[in-house]
Length: 314
Ligand code: UD1
View 1 (cartoon, rainbow, N blue to C red):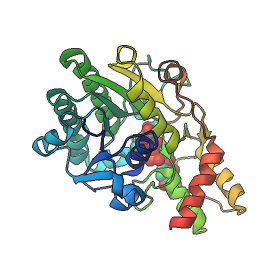
View 2 (view 1 turned 90 degrees about the vertical axis):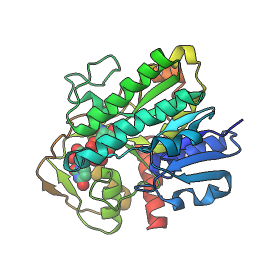
View 3 (view 1 turned 180 degrees about the horizontal axis):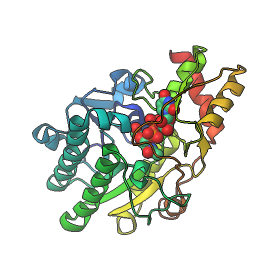
């Protein structure tokens, strides 16, 4: 029996999925990563149980033999970021759409057991109603959102046309240890944490009243494993919200962080960002029902754990 495969397994979320697999009893995990935004150091403490292959999902021939026969494939490799997909649309398109097609094709042709795909809450766009439910019409506002939605459609079609078991999880603004704050495209919480620890004001794009369903990475990783264990006849071809179910504004988030740290720093406000969704909050009822989703970390617990990680690792 081959080992489970995690594409993007040296990245922020992927490396947490690798740990969740090992904690759940996997002997070894195969990781595919081109190390563009992932790092070997993200796997350093589990390196003796990981087979890391430096491979790019845009190159079908290099990934197909690694995926063939895998009991489970967790497809997390992607070029994330809404603004990056606007400033660099070509690599984001080829990785997120062509790369996802390659992973699904390799899994189907290679007889892999199933694929869990990292979709994105950005696919919803601005909905009139919150929380967002899976039956709402997607209204992507950015290339990234459109690409991630296409991946979902492909995952579903690979289930219906090629008999591959697939499940898509729409991630909602995941945060936690190992999120890389070093790029302007980094997730907002990693940037906020770095500012906080360096006692600098963060830049908030817009008025800061936009809200997000921030979800702690360990909860997301555990949900990925649950999705991979759920009965195929229930979950195959489906998409589920992988959020926490709450919603907090950026202004409130910065205020909570300052309170935890016992400081008072006024943010700097900049122009709103193109492609930005105003409010995001996922209804988790379907994921609870079909996948046994049970987030364990409150927003504040997640913030505290993450802050401690940055303090120890910066
Ligand atoms: C979007 C998706 C998310 C996906 C992510 C991948 C939505 C609702 N969410 O996240 O599921 O995982 O893309 O990259 O579409 N901001 C600041 N200052 C900063 C950086 C960001 O104010 O320095 C603001 C942004 O304008 C945005 C919010 O913070 O309003 C969150 O931004 P970011 O962390 O980049 O994630 P989303 O684009 O919301």
